[in-house]
Amino acid sequence: MVAGVTVAAGAVGAGVGWVFLKRWISGGRCHSNARLDGKTVIITGCNTGIGRESAKDLAKRGARVIMACRNIEKAEEARLDVVKVSGSANVVVKKLDLASMKSIRDFAEDIKKEEKQLNILLNNAGIMMCPQWETEDGFEMQLGTNHLGHFLLTLLLLDLIKSSAPSRIVNVSSTAHERGSMHFDDIMLKKSYGPMKAYAQSKLANILFTRELARRLKGTGVTCYSLHPGVINTELTRHFPSYAAPLVYLGSAFLKTPEQGAQTNIYCCVDEKAGEETGLYYKDCATATPTKAAQDDEAAKKLWDLSLKLVGLEE
Image 1 (cartoon, one colour):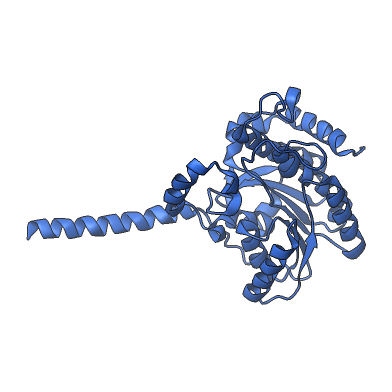
Image 2 (spheres, rainbow, N blue to C red):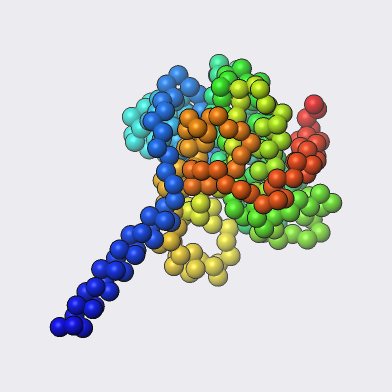
């Protein structure tokens, strides 16, 4: 009898523990009821994962959502899902390949011709731990896509964003930045490439870009955010080596769902308190402290100047 009670108590304790563990894993949630009626939002890389979930939420709030994606066929499937879930038909797909400077410039020109305002730019797209690939323009793929592509896109749309103030620019980074360094002497890592090394550098670049952008936009009504969405069960792991697949599968129960992972994206896009802040880093819908390397304003300025040169922009 005692043994049975002990087993039952253990089972109940394990169940309660699992509930609390899942709640801890899920992280913070965006509780803002802010509406976005009459506002225009661009989300990059949103045919799947947290970008798609972010699109659903912002469309529900009444925003015109522009889904900027490389794969138009998959993006159209995602658009239909967003429309169905949100109940909003004001959702459109536009072609954008962040690994192509030409595609970015064409996209930006189209937006400036067709859209009267841009209230939120959510730079969500990313590639993680791919082989040593190069973009169309010869950039290391992860730095080129995750940082330089979004850097060029943001600056090309900046006048429209500023004229739409109050407006927000949200850059999705990662705690992987904690393992990163800016290799200014070999920024494309041609001499010493490593998939995680390149990914961590690109995510550190996201935070440094946000800090410098916020400094330059102070007083314009445009606020800027970088964030870690959490460790999420998405297609971002598609380039992991095959031997890691069992670990990814076994660990999936301990990962955030895309809906949970999208919460900090959404928070930075709409939360009223966040709207009073700029240049900060967020995790689980709250401000967090990035590494010292991510707070280096001199490195942020150096990255800005180098990025301008690489993408062919003049100040």
